[in-house]
Length: 378
Image 1 (tube, rainbow, N blue to C red):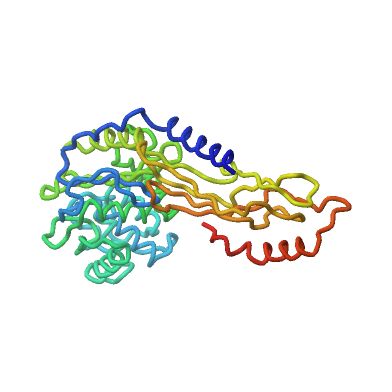
Image 2: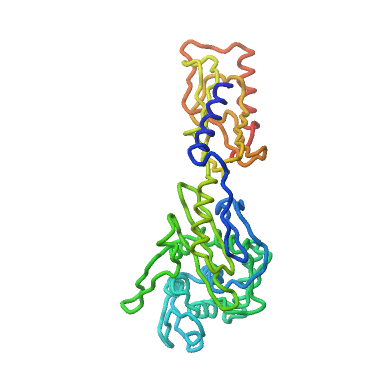
């Protein structure tokens, strides 16, 4: 067991050394009034600046508009555009009174062209009015844990009661990325919806930042430049939010380069979590044991990773592949982050002619009866 633990520790060390620099670099300075960078999967924050400060968010609002619209409408639903929807001020996807559009077309116009007209159309179609839709937006914000946020409209035009925080917008971005329809749209660089209607995504990071997968830009005179983005490199997905940032493109790229240099998502499963247990009365002397399923742990170059195995000293044949043997817990700096079941990696039949004496039979029965009390699965 000591040897196998040493092998596991070596594998983890190799993963960290190959993924990170020899020393932990300081984060770059940013121009944003508020900023946060976090792991999209776990929400772990790796950089923040005034992350809970309430500020106007301009058109990044439309991420919530899209999320709520999809929860209340099917993408293929059709609606006829009304005059008041098409006449809204600010950026537009070019809607015309009387034309028929699908919810999906409006979502592309909302998120690529940042159409205020698309936001208004979706809100009124989904809820009947801007006020009713804003109530749905605030309900969704509460559900996501966006405690510093309040919405009054679906487009983000300036309103003293319409605001959020960098931390809250990161929560919203993570929720949007879990919706396949939205994840596809926000990562789309260009789209031609009709022969006459073509859009290019306003998010320059899709072209300029390695691994960028969305999400949304914004600007008003009161909010300044706002940007919510996500980036994925080598299996790690990060979210960055900047509010009131005149250098948002450069800041996001610098923050991603720094974060990916210093943090990684480590994967644990059968391929790098393997043990060997003495096998009694089997055709072989030992049983290979591996993790069932997999677990992902987000860690920095300075974090201490530890595996703690819960295994018996030996097992009796017969065993079948997949039989539960024990569990392994994964700790980061002493904090438990994940747990996996450990199972037989192969069949282990009883050796020909081998028999168990009375006490061995009792011990074998006790072991099989209690093997599922060794810890839960991840």
